[in-house]
Amino acid sequence: MGKKIVFFTHGKVNPHEESGMSRIVYYRTKYLKRLGYDVEVISVFEDVDHHEIFTRDEILSVNLFPRIYIPLGFKHSELKKYLDANRGDIDIFDFNLMWFYDKVPVGKYLNQEGIPYIVTTHCAYSKDKIAHKPLKKNFAKYSYELPFLNRSSGVVAQTPEELSGLRSFGVSAHIYIYSNEIDDDEISAISNSEPFQLDGLLKLGWVGNITPVKNLHNLIKGIGILPESYRNHIKLYLVGNAKDKAYKERLDKLIMEYKLEDNVVFLGPKYREDKYRFLKSIDCYIHTSTSENISLAVLEAMAAGKPLIISRTSEVSYLYKYDFFVMVEPWYDHIAEGIMNFMDLNSKEREIMGMTAFEIVKSKFSVGVLIDKYVNIVNQVLNRRE
Image 1: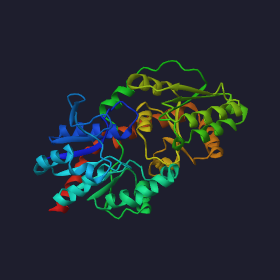
Image 2: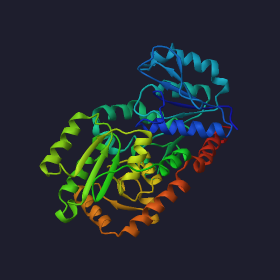
Image 3: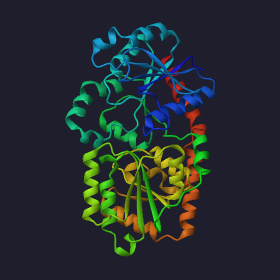
Image 4: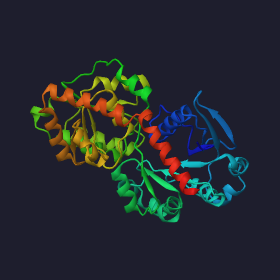
C-alpha cells in the first residue's frame, strides 16, 4: 500500500453540487480511506489568498491554495513550500483539473522530484468542448495541456470511446480506463426516495447544467416535430442551473417557435433529496449530449430504476447489449424517432428496462465495486516507476 495518494483539483469539493469532478474526487477519497489508504486533497481556489484547510465533513478536508497563473507564481508560492515539506510522504498525484494552467508547474515539479502523476480527464478534451472555445482551447492544448498529459505516468479515461478520443487529441501516454462511479450510499438513498406528483402521461426528465454541450436545443426540436398523437402525451422536465443565459434564451425561443409551452417545464436546480424524489417521479430519463461519458445524472437515473433514452455520443455503445435504454443520435430528427420508439413499448417492457438499469448501476458503476480497479491502476503506476 502506498504512503499517500493526493488528488489535485479546483474548489471546495462539494459532493452535492453539479460538478461531477468534485463528486468523483469525494467518492474516491471516501472509499480509499475505507481501504486504509492515506488520501489528501489539494485544491486551487480563487477565493483564498493563502493556504487554508477547509473541512468538508468527517471524510474530507481540503488543502486550499491560491490560483497559479504564471510559472513564477508557483516558484515562490505556499503550495511549493507545502510540497517541499511533504514530498517524501507522497506516492502519487491524481490531477482532476482540465484546462487550468495551475497544474502545469505542479506537474513539472513532480517530474523533477520523481513523483508519478496520473490525470483523470472527465471527457474534457472532446472535439465539441474544444469547438465551444476554439481559440482559447487550441492555444491551451498546444502550449501546455498536451505536454502536461504526455509527461504523466498515465491518463485515466472513463470509457473506451474516450480513450479513442484522447488518442485523436494527441495523447501518447499510457491510457487506463476507469469508469465514472456513484456512491453506494447514494444509490440506496435514491432508490428509497418517495416520488412526488408531476403532471403528464409520459414524464421525461433531465438533470444538469443548461449549456450547449447538453444539446437541449435538439431535444426540444425533437419533441417539437413529433406527431401530435405522441407530442400531446409528453411533458419534459428540465432540472438545473441556467448559467449560460444566452443559451437559455435560445431554448425559450425554440419552445415558443414549436408551441411547446405546455410540454417543456424548467424546474430550476434541485439537490440531494429533492433531486432524488424528482428522478423517482419521472417515467424515463432522457440524455442527448453531443459528447459526454456516462454522466453522474445518468447513473442517478439508473439508481432510481428508470429506463433511458440516451445519445450514442454520451459514450454508451458498450452498454447497448444490456437493453436498458433506447439509443439515439444527437440530432432532433433521430431523437424524435427514439422518443416514439420508447413510447411504443408497453409498460412491462419499460419496467424491465428500469429494473435492468438499477442492476447495472449497482454491479458496474458503484464505487464499492470499482474502487479496487482504481487501486490496481495506482499500483501499476507505482510498479512501473520502481
